[in-house]
Image (cartoon, rainbow over all chains, first blue to last red; front, side, top):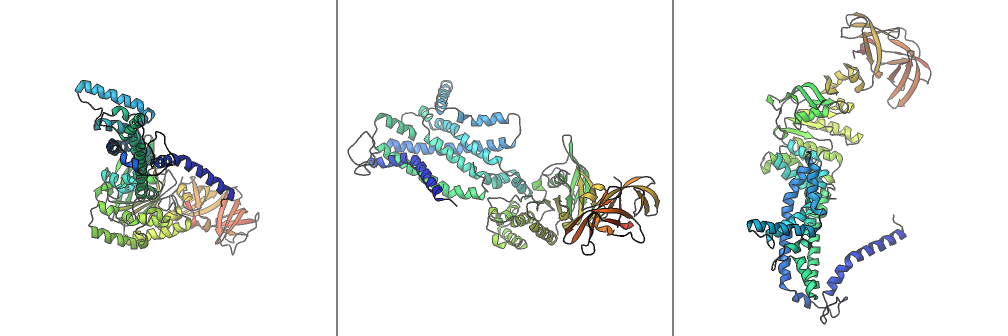
Amino acid sequence: MQTWTEKVILFVWCGFSYVFLLSPMVVVMGASLHGGEFSAAIKFPPDEPSFQWYSKIPTEQFEALALSLLVAAVATFIAALIAIPAALGLVRSNFKLKFAITSVFRAPLQIPAIVSGIAFLQLYYLIFDTSGLMLAGTIPGMLLGHVFIATPFLFGTIVAVLQRFDHRLEEASYSLGAGRWRTLYRVTLPTIMPGIYSGGLYAFMVSFADVPMSIFLTAPGFVTYPVELFYAMENDFDPSILASSSIVIVFCLAMLLVVQKVVGLETLLRSGGGSAR
Amino acid sequence: MSGVRLDKIVKSYGSTVAVNDVSLDIKEGEFLTLLGPSGCGKTTTLRLISGFIQPTSGAIHFGNKDVTGIAPQHRQIGMVFQDYALFPHLTVSENISFGLVERRYEKAAIKKRVDELLALIKLEEAADRYPSEISGGQAQRVAVARAVAHPPSVLLMDEPLGALDLKLRETMQAELRRIQQELGITAVYVTHDQSEAMNMSDRIVVMNDGIIEQIGSPRDIYSNPQSVFVANFIGQVNVLECKVTRKKDNITDLDYNGQKIRAQHEISLRQGTNIFLAIRPENIKITAKAARNPQNTLKGVVSEALFSGNVMKISVELESGDCIKVECQPKANSFELGSSVHVNWLPEDCNILLN
């Protein structure tokens, strides 16, 4: 049983943590409801609350948001196609270069995104010089960069799940007449699914929120959402940025809830705690 | 369904030989147990039969079919693992139907077979639960049902009761035996628990260091062990080192520490051979005074007396310094520590072991 003092300490500690984590979002969302005169400074709490700034969000931001969602979703999908077989192969094989290759897959985490961005841009110029194909400012070019930074997150969580994978599950499947592919489809993948989901969520968020690398791969009329916001903040701040941020915050929270509801707790419990971490 | 034949199977890993020249003929419908201490090669033998590993040399037949080199998914085996290996993402009935789906049964046939098996293992009410929501004993039964859903040529079980507590284990032994006999399936069972092997098996294969020490019915192995290892591994035994002094027909006279001992045994022995004499504790009588016709009688002192309910376990230190364990009825026998006693046994209860 918790004593009365323990309860108070727990309550206060948790209270501070939540305030610390949530207050920036509360401030942004509150200030977006500013209804008075235009002011270059954030007003919190808002006076005369209204939704006027929501109708003044520039269309470029919605276009950028659509691009970002598309890039993040496709990049996550491609990253999963790379990370799943890579993790399966590397966890289970025992060849000399295993550790070297494992660190290659983790390397993008160690390189500052801004360095990766410059490197990609240089690479694209080089490709342009030799073949006339321009990748910077195109969807494939953007995707390539995002796959690069997203893959390690999926790879890491899947490796973690696989290291605790009970190989007898696969043997049981073989003994029941399932071949290698059937076993992969009916036993291995469903068992590591929690790792794929949580790794995929990380990968999606990393891709969706990236500024330092994406900023090098954009072109006029081809800008991802965080980069668009970054430009907007730099040039002429107005509360419509707060409004658009608020929409994204609500969208992200909703997405998290859905993921949690659909695959989160349930799959984790079912696989006997075979979660990503 | 079919019998299983192992032909001079060898499995080595580098310079270590895990299974060394094992030949074995498992009859159709038989319950055969591979028994031995850990590292004796029993699990390796089972995995060779299942096809998860391939023998370095030798051949494996299921019935008339040579299955050496064939992958496990093409062998028609049923396998029950030590901690069940139920698929955590599938319900009890989905686990049981897994093999049926792989073998392309009709939907209706799958449902019928699953219901049948749920009834066989008495788990109808748990059909829609997940493995994390059922008990160890229930999981065990699901694992068996899954393994036999599509009738296998042979049912292989690798210490399937190891994770259960003692009481449940005894219930499950009877349960497994019942299911095996009801289905008439050939079964190979691996365990290191000799009482489990005795309870369940038609025949026991005692293994040690990658070789077969002895094959026989539980009764045969218990009463006629052919090596010191088998005698020691199956139940308690007293081993005395003796020398053969005379051999006539099936009666052998032995010398133990200057005293004459008579044994009845079929083995032909040359005079002067050193042998080991094995006697089970329950075949030894203990008396306060020397018997009137003192055959196979040795004198000693009670060094330990343990009362364990149905039996009295008494250790007697002989004049030679060896200790003899005796099991007897507690009612008729109460011996003080340190009191001097006589132990004796019948010539037909003697086992002669050469190594």
